[in-house]
Length: 120
Image 1 (cartoon, rainbow, N blue to C red):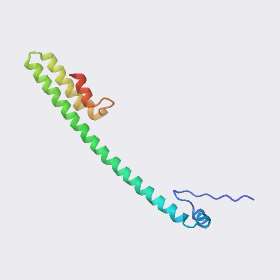
Image 2 (cartoon, rainbow, N blue to C red; image 1 turned 135 degrees about the vertical axis):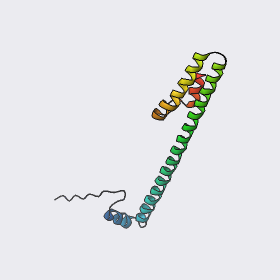
Image 3 (cartoon, rainbow, N blue to C red; image 1 turned 30 degrees about the vertical axis):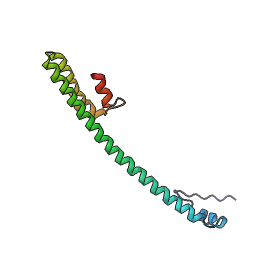
Image 4 (tube, helix red, strand yellow; image 1 turned 60 degrees about the vertical axis):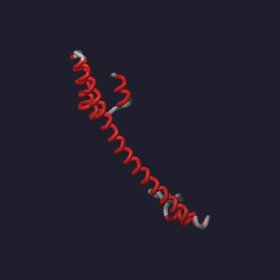
């Protein structure tokens, strides 16, 4: 005769906890304390990750703004020096990247400063 039991959850079954406690007094309390500490740690890490994600989004928006302003500045400078086609290309391309590509795809593997340096 075979008896099978099944328990699902993050903690051992009550029977297993009793067996641990019988084998080693204080083991059940240690297991419960470790579970509580792990849950608190996980919540702290998830909160930290969410805050960093919000911060990263803000930095991406700031980078896009700086990139767009730099592109407009370079376009104005090029047009002042009578290089209208270059100014239109740099200014128009910069605006397209900032307002169309950037919000959809994000900066991707190329950071905004590297992209700005590439275009300069």
